[in-house]
Image (cartoon, rainbow, N blue to C red):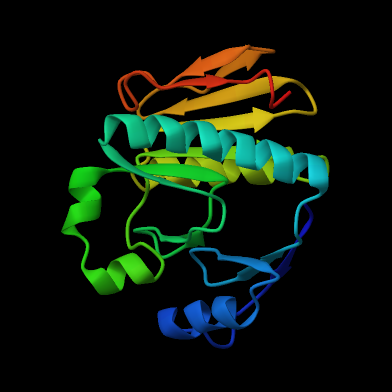
Length: 190
């Protein structure tokens, strides 16, 4: 999925205006950097879309079974503490954080950073951009993140206070202490 960045140096969209822009253009995926620049991402291709739903399905199944939190797919937006608006390919929040949100906060972009995120690299994604995004998630409170690089059959694991770990062609990933008991089967993702 290629992206286009539009600079917003002379004015900024308010949170409400950005949200409405996204609602008015549902065929496009938007994100917004912490500087206020608009990131327009094209829809994914068939393979990436299929792999995204596989990942979201596995996360949702685990989340539904243990009832410890709420899972989100790639269409969910998060307003990070640094003011960026991001939409990871899959994300998860503990139930205690979800329950603290007002009904209005639940309807719009969720005003906090997920504890867990997954980004799935498609052929047209620049690896460095995704790595920067993963670092941004960590800086804003994510506890565990996986950058799944199908092209190179690698997974980069991002953890708070630790160096990035790179796994070569793993068959599964553990949710560790953040998503206790969650195992992502990578067989259908590769």
